[in-house]
Length: 93
Image (cartoon, rainbow, N blue to C red):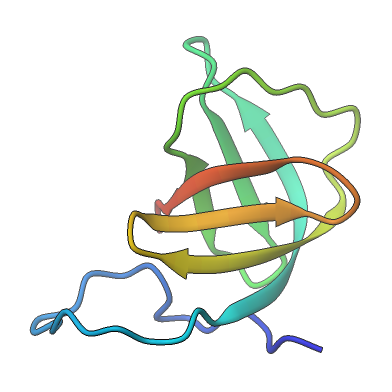
């Protein structure tokens, strides 16, 4: 089972060295989400973190109460919703 999403994940670091690491997956639970007028989704997690959609794509969510896995890759962060969609995300706060 993947660890929970840490508080510092997605925050800019003062000195971030580029190095190759094995991708690490973090688990979290989205308790609410909302779509802006320009079609960008914002996701609020149980721990208070807010992430937003950074990639292109149009998504539809019937319910915003689901578990996700966030992984970091060369291009940023990818959020995979259990049993469904995968989208690029960036941490808002």
